[in-house]
Image (cartoon, rainbow, N blue to C red; front, side, top):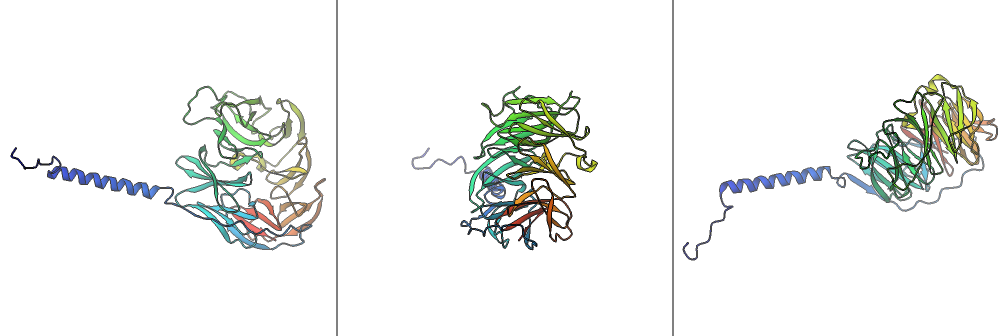
Length: 409
């Protein structure tokens, strides 16, 4: 080669330039797709300072109440009032609102994802989003400011609800139950585990599940298993040495099918057997402790409740179960039925030191000991006539009316 003459680059041919240009185009397209589907690009947030303290609740339930505001909140099964803030959740947005005005103080919005369910535990908000196959993305928020406190990816099913025992939260489902501790780290999984790593750890992975309840670091579930003539009640621990190896406290075949776990308290589990028209309380070892007649309307027991969990609430004095047409008071000590009020729209809560239960046209203020109606309070719910769930926040009473939350005072 003559001195001083540069070697021709092997990438200087027309074909090479075309290949390089194609690579640049592909990279640009991939980058555009990644940017378009990026979670960060489709997430917007606004934080807030902690709110001013609300006024104290009245000494007794007011004789009349007026609606202050109403907002869409289809992802909250129960209205959420925490840290002097009302949290609503609809579409992809979780919003913290002023309880008296409904004005949004903070929000966390996923424009490309829809909410599955939102609930509160440990004084925080847990927002579960639908991503890919199921309800797999969870963001935990401080209800006062909207600040993110934890996040996780999970395997919850579509239609899941969150239930908690004060220490752990469990996701409901037909084939898998996941349990988390307060930092959203998984402590237990039960059922048909996706991406199974260790075989033969789950006791009955081919069963489907009915209702689920929790108490005292235990989960109770109705199982319907191939080969079983009747439903099965299983109680297992919320934690174990290995998260994929449940520690079962007991499992027992029940007297019939269509069974429903109603509530748990300590080592006791209350189960409805609709075909036998019985409500049965089981002890720590699965033995029957007591049985009570419980004849409910056919419509109340035709199907498992939405989300696999019964409509129950707890006060300092009792547990209240809404069957679909009536409210049943259960003892916190032994889960025995204490009294029943017909014609209700939901379970009861304590508001202004008194037990209130939603009824058509308003609220019934009850004697918590015997269920006697002390008086009623009229509330205009417009055209809405369905079930109502209640939450009290200072002087404000919150009502979940289907896909909307209303604030009353």
